[in-house]
Image (cartoon, rainbow, N blue to C red; front, side, top):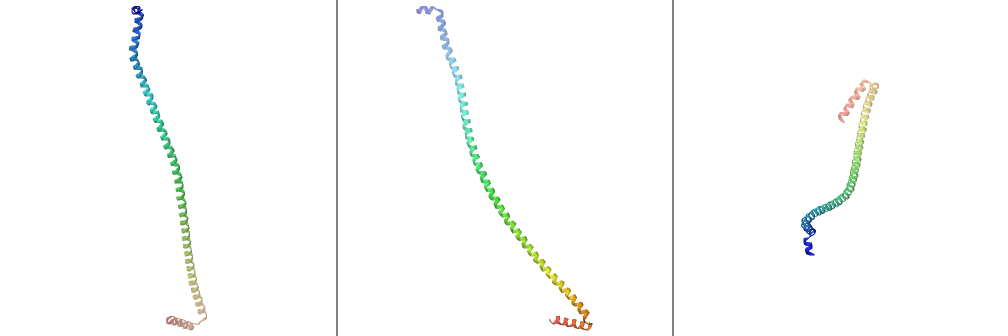
Length: 162
């Protein structure tokens, strides 16, 4: 039987086919494995890269959430600070306004007193002037010239000696 197999062409074709497949399988296998390994490496790199991007995105999201929280706190602080400043400025303006009103009131009171004094002085001056004029007319009309000269001389003597 072995001799029959050795003389049969089909057997040798089968042996050649097996040898061919074995000899071709090894390089093809290494090419296929190499190609698959490259694909696996690319997929693994893509997965690693995607994981890294996801981790970066999560970190960025946490940073943004922290910044938003801090921003809200800062806004509340700024709002409170601004409100305090406004209240302080409002209080200062009220005090300044009251001071200016009181100052202007004092100035107006002083001006009124000054005008009253001027009016009183003017009234005294006019009263004295008209009194003197009236007395002059009365004296001129009722006193004779001799009595008039005597009266003036005695008045001058009183003023000089007085």
